[in-house]
Image (cartoon, rainbow over all chains, first blue to last red; front, side):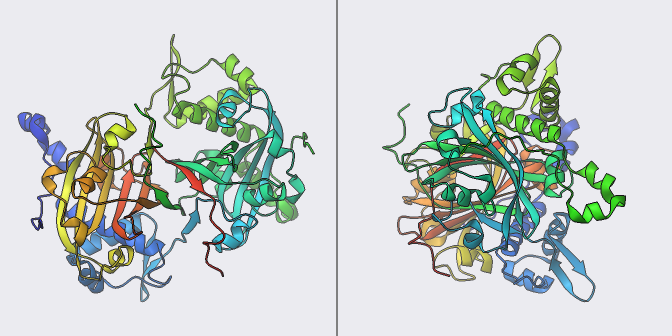
Length: 277
Length: 277
């Protein structure tokens, strides 16, 4: 059963709008046309290609080649390239063509294998922390609720650092580590990444839970990450678990927009494990 | 080995800056002070609490209670609340106190159990698609590279829709579905969510890979999602796999900033499965 019909993509403004012709022009202006949607789809595909390094870091194919590859009109190709330019991802240079101008970084969301540094695992460049804060604090209720077997007011170790890639700030993370595990880590050996720090403390990690959200960089995050205040950043919430499933560390991170967090092999939720409602 | 010493959090401007006193003021202005970092840490914890509904949708605790809970000074508490206000998350109302003003949605990144709708699984409200585009297209190189056993130019089905939650747009997704699977799906039954659509086509899903990044909403996405152009959005790249591990669908999505994508139970990367370098 093949559907080959092309939809009319201009959105239906709905009954309410039809009943109120006074608003029609306003609504029509706000609704994307078929051409807008086509340009956006092509932009998204080109962005995916840019991220995967399909153009080998070199210039993008010319307009005619993009038209042929994507069976798109010249107008749509130009509009898509214009969107990429406005996203700050490409630039047109006289005599050189259209070039990618932003380096993007694909970072695995899963912890690297035990004993292997994040630097060796990602192979993106030299990874090092810039320590901002290392202090024992009494766990506030929100931290006690997220760590296993930690009561409100019980000591945990707060470790905050900027993650540097080749000396460029990529993210800032604040970790809250339970006392049993925190007792084994040493600030003096925090030279690589947080997972490696845990490994030096003899802490066995089995995996993590991650939550992600987009937000604007506040002034402080902007200064730490060398971006402008208000630029989009990726907020990351991470719970690190040991082999027994206990939450031993809770982290809140803010990542630059250039970073794509990748999580592979996510299994479909198991019906038998799902709680009945 | 407990470390109880509190670091001086004012960042060290480094040797270069010390050698060039002319830049010192400028650099000092850019580097967050200890107070800024404390306020930011508290703001991040309050944001996590807001997201998890710890305040029951009601008002936030008063300044004194926050000071006690987090062992923070009044200045730090006020600065943290001010950051939350600037993030558009809370508002102070005379006589009512400080209230959350933004609804946030936690959405699972893993596909729901087979045959269970996303609506039933998330239990956030009525979930429905608003179809924008449903058309067969010859696969461009970028899509052929991401789907299993699809050659460039081979037909695949492009399905684009806005994901509505109680009629409010939450995300826009463009899917590229392989022909063998696309042959089984019917536009007329796309009434719930994309996973349910695949299920009606008898397509067995085992799991997915996800990549996420923060970006600014373009004009078109802004109109579709009812946000202002430039607002932060979460870009989601998803590859859906069947039981054999074959990539049957590739999707590019743009989600509102209110949406937190949650992925639990991510295992540490297996050393034996990692490719040797």
